[in-house]
Image (cartoon, rainbow, N blue to C red; front, side):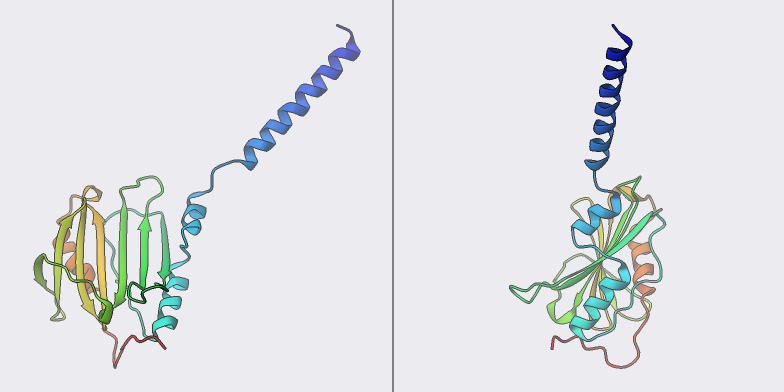
Length: 185
């Protein structure tokens, strides 16, 4: 092989190698954050603002979360344009490395609440919460500030006694002073 042919072949191999690396970089899967954005998730603040503006009411989130490690948090406001009944705000705390580490808070106006049957717990502020284990999740439902909250944690996420922990999380939602009637204008 002549020196000229060797240089030409080397240049072609380098060119092809660079193209393949570049193509691989262009086709890389979306990041963890980008996946959630593709499903309509934004920051918690942005999603809460959308919900509050839509219903003209204030949302208080729990000040506590379960004793589970999280790496990301997202929010999404869903507007049910067809039936006008299933509007909700979803807050998610997730762990990119431990997928079972998840905590969700679904919030909807009380006038569109869902009915649940489970074990009742009396909360510190006098309200009642309902605890349910179903579909591999711990669920805790309660009403406060004219909103219905549904907390959920996967069964395998923690060995902490979840009914009590979820009740404490529910109690960490601040009471809104004055009227907080959620309405659509």
